Length: 133
Image 1 (cartoon, rainbow, N blue to C red):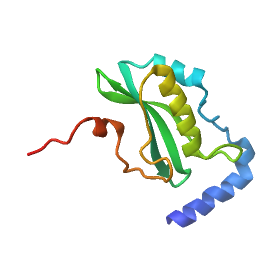
Image 2 (tube, helix red, strand yellow; image 1 turned 30 degrees about the vertical axis):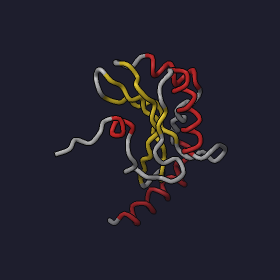
Image 3 (cartoon, one colour; image 1 turned 90 degrees about the vertical axis):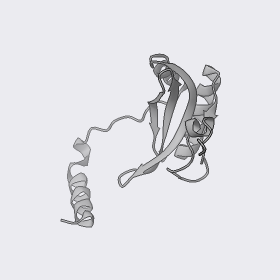
Image 4 (tube, rainbow, N blue to C red; image 1 turned 120 degrees about the vertical axis):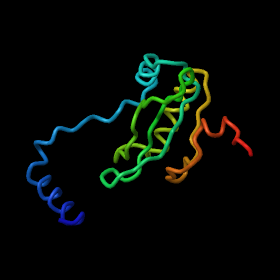
């Protein structure tokens, strides 16, 4: 079965069984919820970053992550999908990310807020100069 046929089968099943599908509520984007998530992370939060991602189901969406140091890493804070009754994902993520970054006293980074780009430069890459020959 090809992808197009599979999508049609899923769509048909959803039309019949859609009322039985348990929907996961969207991740909360309010400052209190995001600050609580950031507070339990290991390591110091060095920045809050918004990053584009996408798939065939949700199209483009934005991930909000806490970039940490000691140990280096990042932790997922929220996934911001398109909401018919709200701001576009980039706008909602930027508002929430700026608010959290301000609350934590760290930088906020969103390399491509105006158009989806999952290859946009990440905050950590911009903080470390490229190693030369």
